[in-house]
Image (cartoon, rainbow, N blue to C red; front, side, top):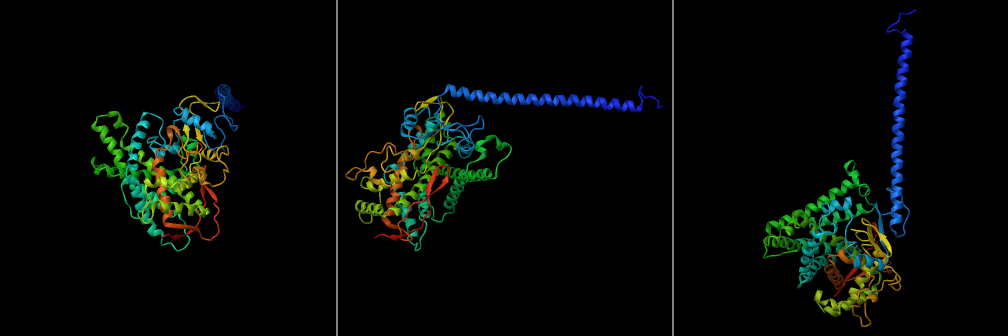
Length: 505
């Protein structure tokens, strides 16, 4: 028999060690089981809490009808990552945007929106606040500068003249939007920065390319907007590319602002950027400290970016639609040209003062903006308090979209809604009639497009210039049918279609 050690035989000692180990393991296993059930209890409680909260909200608020969604997760097939309401008829849009405009005047914060707005600064993406109101007032005054005298028409006519020389050299079928895009961006360069750029300017070409690449990446949205915190852990390749594009775009505008600061003279306001700098100089002279704080360099860059970038894409898309319809309906093109010839005579370029004599041309542009809604649902609004619309409750913090496409295709307001018909906007004697109630391409209320007066005049001047100088026809000689594509969520564009041109005498 073996001698005992510590009062045990060797085999007894082994059994005791194993027994103690099993006991400890059992205790640890019990702890794990307890922890598991504890976490499970928390998870179940959390989920029940969410269900209770959702049920409470359903009982508290009379919500508009909509798709079923899971608590917290929502409905991943829908456009928005948070609670959203779409206003699809004129009565509810007017109720929300005009009658209760302050309730619906805010903007939601998104990760991609913050990227382009330096965290919600400027006008387009900033929250509804005293700062926003002041900056909108300053920007509006700066834009009105271009509605005085002949400043805007001089810019448009000068740019059109140069680009038409290049365009008239086209002998084969070509895409006309390549030239209309250049017209728009050259006008914006001149308006915002006082630059009359060379037609082959690398800056102009790069900005156009940046705009194209940014729109392309917004096509399918970003997971970073759905889960904002994910950027602190991981960024998708598409998001990193967007960051680079946004940085390049804003860096360009920052450099232009700095150039203007270095050469600014109060007695010589050269462009839109100088007008904004003048507003800050006046605030500094009058020692309005609060106003100066709302016009820092960061804010100024964003105010200019709103006009420059906002005006670029929407104006180009509208002209794409206009030219598509002019080619598709040669009878309307000829009627516009006859009106332009009669109003301007020989050798005179269009001016803002000719507008009253270009009613049919303007009616064609208005119908273009109805049929080709370039911002079909616009930028989302955000409720700043509990409100209501159409008899339904809209809680504070709800994202609200205006469905402009629905408004522009509502058979209750538009006869033969699918037809391109410029006569909708004219009186029997061919003059402009009152604007139809359901025509809202520039929105309404607090967030109505700041650049509407300039944009409508600019579009008419460009269109009149185009039709005054050229006939536009299909390359095949067969009547063109407008087909469409989507280039961004909710935005429809005409498919690119090659045309041939004839120089008009």
